[in-house]
Length: 110
Image (tube, rainbow, N blue to C red; front, side, top):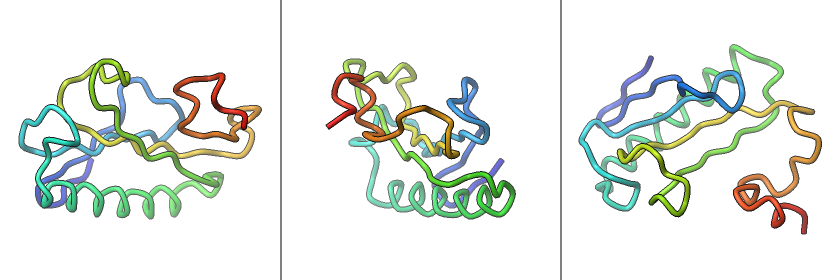
């Protein structure tokens, strides 16, 4: 799909919404905290690039979630670092308030 320096992107195999992609460092590293500063920089730049592409291709996108799960207790199931870029559309969930706080559903509403 896309590559930039030390990072590449692929569509998520189980997308949360249409257009959900994973940005992944080329080097095998278990999670975000094991990535070098350069790998983080390249991943962030690729997230930005893909955001622009998605917005240009799909005018229904009104926001994004950008997320990283680090460790099994945090929901990481693939033990290779990756950043989720999840396009969001108005009405894709009845109550979006709380965003990433939804990993613990009762903590979303505050």
